[in-house]
Length: 134
Image (cartoon, rainbow, N blue to C red):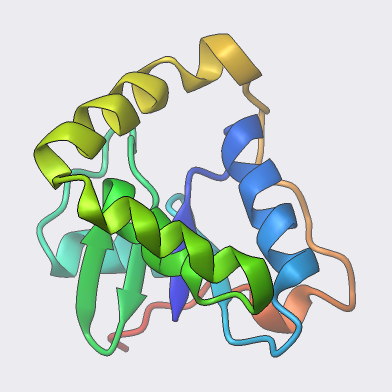
């Protein structure tokens, strides 16, 4: 499973750090939406590339976005994190407007970086940059 995130968003980067710390089986890989991998995936699936406002989960050639992506990503972690599946009982038409409200205001609420942070040596193998379609 590949998690695509806004690499300049502080909230998004904190989410990635949260996932790395708890993904003990290393099942998740990561790519910023600004990377070659992210840009290629957005183009391939005809998703908007300007001002990325959703985390994207790319898994088995399928795309999940917004709250569906977050629920799937967090529930892939071991332990108590599987409990987030309870939020699936709330219909997407209720979950996603709340997700979009936070996403639209994430820079104001959490700040923005000038560039994507560099992963540590131990994390580098989990971050993708090259296009998945080359």
